[in-house]
Length: 467
Image 1 (cartoon, rainbow, N blue to C red):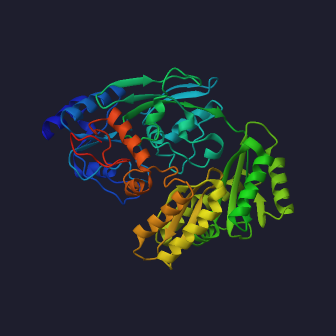
Image 2 (tube, rainbow, N blue to C red):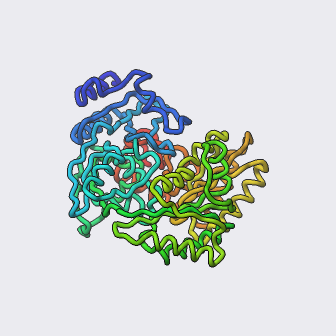
Image 3 (cartoon, rainbow, N blue to C red):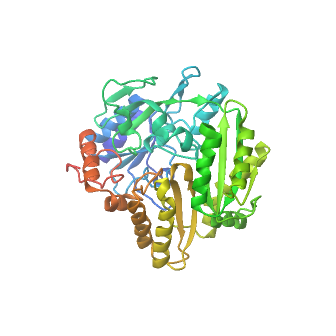
């Protein structure tokens, strides 16, 4: 049956696009962090939506599961195959056409395998912006960012990827192609079914193309770095920033002093301002002029009200990039320190200070020698709460402690990275049973045989069993 399936897949996609050798499969079988590996039967790379549908039908008829994969840049092992040899990795990287870009309607229709950065560059040629900004945008694909509902630094202003999706083309588990590629801002005719597939991590169907909303390309950007004494002060300053800069505020990043120290020691960078317990990296962007006086007023008010300890406004694009490099090198600096236990959490802003105190106390009690590398998108309540265990073996207990603190404050254990394989056990432990039942019901209705991405978001089901 395996030989017959591979022959069928080669007939559909061409022999060069069905990979079976271990060396060829390896890049697709390992997650981005190189911590999770699988053993798929093969990797198949279809060229268009019709070929995807044919691959799905072939795999279904041979009882082979399908693991959809884009740029393989996820941080939750959501696109990594399991250990069973009946899984086929379906890579969408050959499907990379930008089908249509309308600068007047401000929409772009693009295939799932297109690289995010390439689509952004094409939009910029027309004076438009696709406002998803990720560290991995040079390799992340459109299908991947849709399927994971990717976040990034501009969620504060533009929302998650979900807010940008106007239409989808999806292949279902029976090979049906659902064409919902509508370029409409308003479509109230029935269920908004496309949103079920956004953030589903490839467990319900395969996104093969999307229509995304664009925005005017900012012509003026102002960046500032501040230091503050505590998170409560940071939140007060966030409110002041919204009052002073308004809707132009596109990023409001929180970075701990520990994070900056790691960057200075391991990345050879230097903060241009005096230290506080926390740093704030702000950015405002507009297609109109007048932002710089507003940002300067914000800093002036912050100092006058005793909120900021020190601060600077970038006077050039190069200086702005230098400020962002402090933020962008935090993860690399953590890895050079020895790595950490990563948590991608969100809590309501009003609970942020209490969460940090509760989680910090709980972790320190479990692992007295632990360090903390905390940074993230304060404006939307999302922190990367990374714990430096320093050789301790308490990872599971620390995970539980952090996530319990999140749940206590009605937050989420995955703000933007997804559940995948990495967080599945904690999702099962912390998510209310009523919500788990609803998730299983959706899976049962759309993919009753469990064909797509088994063991991600929901536990893997035995062949023929209900979800």
